[in-house]
Image 1 (cartoon, rainbow over the protein chains, first blue to last red):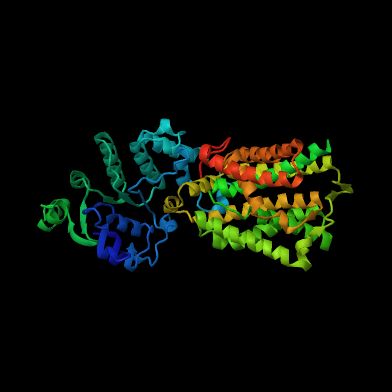
Image 2 (spheres, rainbow over the protein chains, first blue to last red):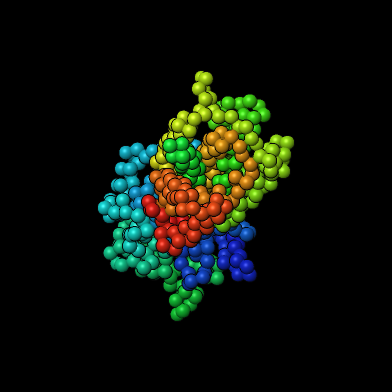
Length: 244
Length: 288
């Protein structure tokens, strides 16, 4: 099994609380890895550490077997990694189209002064918005969209980024069934394109239907890992996560 | 008529300052109080170069923005790491340092006596010494600054600045080193602000440190917020209104000293009312 991300004895404290406690996991390449566990088990903290949103206190994070001592968020483009947020974070006072275009923009600040988006970039953004059903809303401010549309736009930005590794933090939370199906379809398409996906999710039916591999966390530690069928039937997991 | 020209010159100069600071404050959402410092740096650079080294004001229009931009680049490399109120406090500290330096470095800046006898600009034997000719010069510089800020706001760079204003952390995730963008915006804003300072020094022919205090920065804030944050035309409208409307106080018959104090009160009250009832300003689409 080829791995793309590995953590070794990873530690993150918040005051006296260990949010991630000597965690060693492996995220397999080109697969959908589900990250499950009760609230406060450290899933989102782990996503924040992998994307450079937080810095880790101890341990190591390896991308394609190369250790990154300090993960800086702006290096995500170089390492081809992107993410969504548990609490949606859009550029609310910018249009839907601008939210997409900003991801397609030249990253060199000097050259970006002289770049105006050409038809190619606009078409790319509009194609993705069309795919998500947001084309008609492209000139609306992102802050004026409904909750579900905001979730879709956040996923649209991820698609624009075209990263190899995508970290989804509860992308289905609060959505009605039709939209859940739509996002499931998008995630499956990404897998078919060879993307590596990490999916934080509480809905076990979605985990079973989408994930190739599951990692269960509790109190910042790894409780179990393996195929969804195997892991989700383990007694220790049922006790910790489902209270059974 | 000369009075009208005087008002037009002030509107143009403050239009330049408001546009330049709007790039930093409205574009990138960086609450800067350093506007008056870069305004002063432009004015002092022009005054010192012209009176001590015999430079033509036109030459200082090239040098002063470079000096201000370079200073902004140096201090901004630290400030770019700050956000929100921390950024504001850092820029306030910079303005206080600037004021202390110009007030005390007498041999260079004239200290509290200021610098007098700043020449008018001249080119090919033509001196811009009449109010009408100075209006022409000020409006040309204003048009250049308007074109530059319009160009920036329409570029990808401008869009990234707006995204920084909205959510800097979320933007960084997409591979942006946001501190570099903030530093560039701060430096470009400082360089353009310096143009206003050069024109002001040459127009008044005298400057001292009392002209570049926190009051000037607050006035620029009021102009930007009144007209509409992150809108170039808003900054111009704000400059126009806050220069012309208080001038009306002259005709009401208040004593000069009282009218000046009243103006400061109006700016302060205006900011409070705008934040309460119209945080987007007259033409604005954005809230800080």
